[in-house]
Length: 115
Length: 115
Image 1 (cartoon, each protein chain N blue to C red):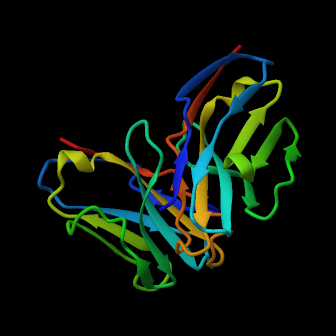
Image 2: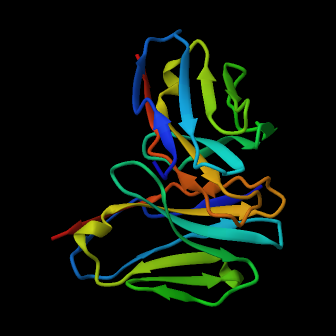
């Protein structure tokens, strides 16, 4: 497809389970972002990649969160030992170039529910 | 630190009424970018507009218009003659030139257009 694709769309995890969320950005897009959106809130920045380099991971809430983009295209956000407070929608976005003015294209998100 | 405030949470309007969404931002940067995104029930964020801090010219696009006032740090969004398809959550966001491309979002405005 032409847009940002995220999978799975929905994930239910038992507390303590590890999960992996996948993002397929638009082909050729240099920048890739992960955001966390709690219910009724705006998205919160988690991490940013420029190609395969993770340039900013200051938004990751704990060391249980890990993101990678090994070949500069597909990215995976991994959450270890999930907790109930991790329940949220995880949004991935990509943009063609780097720079604060560039339009970001968002995927539909993965809704994670930790029970 | 960058911050975006959207005071209203849910706004209900009758179809064909106008609705204005307020956005107030805080930043120490002199160069920054302001965005509005629409989030329909399907979940993805749809880009609506981008303004840079040096361009205070207001903009109209169809039924949408934006009023940017640096003096009050506001970037308000008006939907004229609302339609049911406008029902969504609308987010205002800020990106700073020195902020590594991340977007800081407000909490969003849930707009419900009643037919």
